[in-house]
Amino acid sequence: MILQIIADGLIVGSTIALGAIGLTMTYSLLRFANFAHGEFIAWGAYLALTFLGFFIALGGGGAMAPLGPFSFGWQLLAALVAGAIATAILALVLDWLLFDRLSAQGSAIVLTIASFGAALALRNFLQFVYGTLPAYYTRELQIAIHIVPRDVGGGLRATPDQLFVLALALVLVVGLHLFLQRTTAGRAMRAVAHNPALARVTGIDVASVVRWTWILGAILAAVAGTFAGLVGQLRPQIGFDLLLPLFAAAILGGIGSVPGAVIGGLIVGLAESAAVPLIGAEYRAAAAFGVLIAILLVRPQGLFAERAK
Image 1 (spheres, one colour):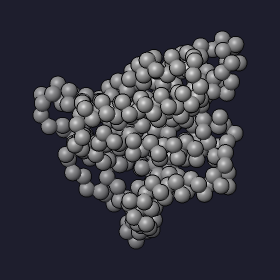
Image 2: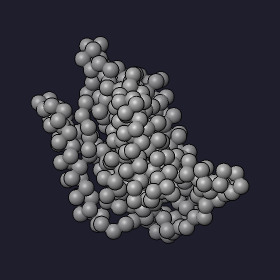
Image 3: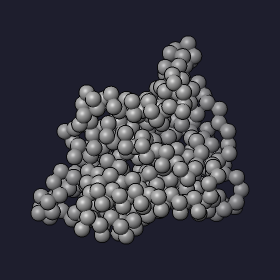
């Protein structure tokens, strides 16, 4: 039982962590809480669904042939990439139409309120385009496989799709860490997050850094949305449902800290997973925020305060 709770929490937490990274990066560089980030998750998931239908039709319109033990084929992997790119374009367009114009003349509270309005508009437009009924990437049923026998810690079972989600999330987090630490663009992003004025004086193109921030955040949001739809179902409210856990993870890890967002996401996921057998699935969000409040009472600045902004 304990091992199963931990495994389920890590799977949920990996999705939350990917979304929280983009949220905390936006705050670190642009200095406002972006409520529209949850809708990037939803739009990324549904855009991947649209591209999935296109790639299936391109292959002859037949059923999607699964890859090995997974419930999906190459079409979903291609749709994931295409959906992530389309979501990045959506984020850049929204920045060009709204945030970039407001940042030159508005305060952080103005940008935050504008992001809330943008979130409402994006969510309602998503419902208008795709409807309100649940959707699925695949109808293939998977049987969870035993990874750890039942007599060891209550046993551990997981589906191949869940293991894929966990593994790819780990790869993306490691890849992002290397990007931020080893590349010129990544170092420029960290410099702007630390001191935008000084970064501009030293010749860093702040506008380009902002664009990279939107692109990376939107790509990770699209992947998070696709992961959530793959192991569950797609609903237009998927981004809104994940928004509060995303903020909890970002605050818990320390606003502005990418490692903190990852750790915070995993903690929130574990708290939600543990809440299901203990107090009921309907109180999952409350349990996650209970952990958040308890930790912040001990360390109000978050777990990675030295990197937070």
